[in-house]
Structures are given as structure tokens and as C-alpha cells.
Image (cartoon, rainbow over all chains, first blue to last red; front, side):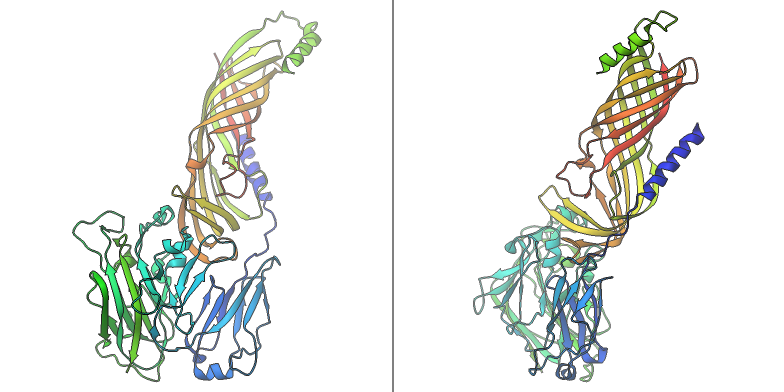
Amino acid sequence: MNLRKLCCIAASIGLLQSCIKDAPQNPEADITAFTVPKDQLTGDVFIDQTKRQVRLYLTDTAFKRGIVPTISVSNGAKVFPAPGDTLRFDSTGMGITGYTITPATGGQGKTYTVRVVGTGNWKFGFERWDTVSAEGASWKYVNPLADDGRNVWASGNIGIAITGVTEINDFPLHISNDAHDGKYAAIMETKPGNALSGWMGIHLFAGSLFMGNFVTDYLLENPLKCTQFGQPYRGMPSRFTGYYKYQPGATFQDKDGKPVPGTTDECSIYAVLYSGTSRLDATNILTSNRVVATAILTDGTAKADWTHFDIPFQNLSGKVVNLNEPVMLAIIASSSKDGDHYRGAVGSKLVLDNIEIVNE
Amino acid sequence: MLMAATQLFAQDNGQAQTNEFKPMLEHRILAGFNFGATAPVGLPNTIRKINGFWPEFSPSLGYELSYRATKKWGASVAVKLDYKGMGTKDEVQYFPTIITTSDGGRFEGDFTGKNQTTVRNAYVSFPISAVFTANDKWRFNLGGYVAWLFSSNFYGTVSDGYIRNGGSLGEKIIITEATFDFGTEVRSFDCGLQGGAAYRVGKRLSIDGNLNWGLRPIFPSDFKGMSFPMYNIYLTLGVTYKI
């Protein structure tokens, strides 16, 4: 009888196996890699899967002559136009402005636009903002653009959207109508976590704004690697200047969300110059041996009125900029300076306006 | 129906009976283990591979009262404490899931990777059967059951894969390992069909096999953590002892 039981169980497992159906076709339509020879780049190519945008950081020569990228897509998906043609950015022709990826299932795909992000000027008034959403998504958040419309800024907002936050002003980074100059400024506000982020052990979302890009890939694994800091820079920066206001939240809390009496939250504002073309992230932005110079605001305490800062870049000992080598510069601001470790006070508000990197 | 059948049978066999038969009540203790699965009927194509399957410790203990109306036909009702559980390891591709949280949060995405799930739900169940006693050795029953949940577990891990926010065109998030727990979502009421056979091996002891096939998905229809309905399909193997 026991043998019979075993046979029964074995047979039912066998039945389950035989029920496995044919593999579904791949419904994904990603550009998984967009490769350009390294000597034509001033910064690593970034594929923004939310905005469906390929951002290129090109040398002057590459910009003038055009590039021939190698494009990898999701298994079984098709690219249009076929890669292999030269992408031209000069004023002479229309050229290719994007790629449409059709998934193996043949259904709805994605169209990626290609954008060249120039180094431009390094004065930011936070007057232009972009509203970011996705087809069919219930969330919507804002992100500042450079004064000339370049996509150089990023924040943790997309990560927070994934945990279920939907309304523009519920995101830690949004628009402030209280501006030092012009109509708008950027406001970062530390927000409480939610049930979904709690599953990941995150009980606080610090407001952040940084120069660079945000990748979602490591959101669960290691969120600090999601923040890809920095944009290509030319020359040697001398000073980091701007205006800010800061109001710490009432109760400082630790990583587990428990109040820590006697501690007051502080903001952080700093800029880092480092060598190379690949981006540093929150795990190594201040510790990497590629860091050349930093400009760090030392006073992160409350400031009720607009306060001016003017911080000289200080070279790390023994580090100098080799003008022939590519360098990148990152500006990073947060309403809770330990926000990267999920410590801070809910309600801490940092307003930032008219910031500038003054070149030598 | 049952009554009519019973009467018909009684008439047919009335003449053939050698001994005089008196209708009687019978009492039995039922004990056994449940083997089976809480699973979809027909696997969806998003499930690519089953790497492991094992029964959880799922005892079943109960008491059955039966009324033997004729020598061959009768009816029974029982009350049972039924644990129904299993574990499975599988691999999925583009598996849609929607997770809602108590604070109104919602995450929707397609997962590709490995999954391990453990199910162990405890029910108080009430099977009702028509009973056919074929001979001195064999006894068959067929009917239905209703069951109320009093403890639920439905949890597991997802690993070695990624989830795409909002669907297969959304942002990719790598998952090395994450846990899930849908225990509180399991429906408190289950019902279905059941039937089986018992073979007498001693004076009062029989070996018993009974298949319980749930007809109500174990999750409510507004729960989207699993994109397909899952049913309790379990075989109780054990003994019955006539008291």
C-alpha cells in the first residue's frame, strides 16, 4: 500500500510536469545596451527606461562626425531603423532621432528617443521642470531641467513611485513657489516610508536632487547603487555657489523608524569632481580614489531665510586635474544628510535655488 | 435524489438479501494525511519549470457519522480538522502580480525568476457523502464538502530574477531574494467535491483514500498576487476506525 501511495504521488508530480505549456514569447522591448566607442564619449551612455530616452555624452569630434552605435535589444525583439546607420547630430540633416523596439510578441513596443546631452553652462535656476509618468501608470512626478532643457538632474522619485506614491507633491522632490530668484526653486522634503518600502526595511524617504541619472535595477538589491552621480565636465571648477533654506523636521528617526531624542536633522549640499567617464554612485562618491576635488557645505543646520553659500573646491591631497583626461562633476543635495542610510526627520525641508559651478 | 436511489436499490435487492437487514447508525474515527496541491487547474504558460514539490505536514483527523439505510446504501456526514499544505519550487517567466498593502499602496509588475512557495492552511471541514458498501471489504463514498479556514499560511520567496514595474515594458528591478506572504488573503470558506474508497483490513480498521477537490479559488477574485485561480486539490490517505 505504501508503494502504491508513492506511485500515486510520483504520478501526480509527473502529471504536473507534463502540464508545462510552451514558453510564452518575450513581451519585453528594451534597448538593453547602446554601445558607442569609448573614445567618442565624455560620459557613459545612459538608457532611461522610464522616459525611454538614450542619453549620449559625446566628444566634440563625435558630435560633429556622428556615431555608429551598436544596439542590443530584448531577446527576439526588432529594432527600427536597423542599427548600422550613422547617427548625425549636426544641423545638416534630419537623421535618426530615435529607435522603435517591437517585442517578439509583436504587440506594443517602446520608442526611445536619442538625446545628446551637452556640457552646457553650469548655472541652474530651477525654472524649467519636466513631468514624468509612464503609459498606464497612476504616478506622476516632476524633475528639473537645465535652463537650456538638458536632462542633467535626477532624484529618487522614480524609486518612490515604484513603492506606490502617485501624487506630484507627495514625492520628496517637487517644485517650490518660494524662489530666491525667478518663479520656482527645487524643494526636497523628507517623507515617511510606506508599507511596501517597509518590506524593504525603508521607513523614510529623504528628499534628494542630484546631477546624474537614476537606474531602477538595483532598487531592491542595493538602492545606493541606483543613484548614478555626475555629468561630464570641462576644465577645473573653482567654486560651488547658491542659495538655500533649511528647516529640519520635528523628530529624528533611525533606520528602523524609531525616534532618536536629542538629534536634529541636517541637510547636505556638496559637489564632487572625479576622473573618468563612468559614474560613481552613493556607495563610493566620496570614497573612490577617482575623486579629485570636493566642495562641501559644512553648516547643515536650520536656515529660515535664503542663505547664500560659496564654497571653494578643494583638491584632495596629491590630486590634480589632467586637462587631457575626461572628468565628471556631480552636485548632490538632500533634505536629510543621513538619508542614504534611511535616517532623518520626516518633514525636513531643503529649498535650493540659483546654484552655479564657477569655472577657473 | 439520494433518497430515491436508496429506495430503488432497496427494492431491487430486497429479495436477494439472505439475512434480515436493519438500518443502523455507524460511527468512525478518521485519521490520515493530506497529500496534494493548492494549485491552478492546468498550469499557465508563465510557469516554466517545477524544480521541486513536497507535501507539508498535513494531518487530517475527524469523526464520521453514517446512516446505513440498506445493506448497500447509506449516507454520511463528518467533521474533520484538515491541514492542507505543500511546498513547491518553480521557475516563472513574465509572471504578472499585483501586490496591495494595508496603507493603500499598490505594486504591479511582471516577475521572471525563481519562486519557492509554502502553503499550509487549516480547515474545519464537513464532508457529506452517499455511501455504497459493496461487500464486506470495500466501502465507497461520493459527495461534497464545505470547509472553514481557521489558520492560513501562504508565503515564500522570489529570487534570481527581476520584476518589471507596471508590466513587461516597465522599469526593471533586479531581485536577488525577496519574501512574500499572502497568508491573510486566503479565503475563509472553501467547498468542493470529495469521494473515495475504504478497504477493511481488520475487524474495525480500514485503509481509506479520499480525494477532495476544491471548487472555489482559495483567493478572492480581487486578489491579484497570483494571476490565476488556485484550488485545494488533496488526497487524504489514512485509516478509519469503526467505533
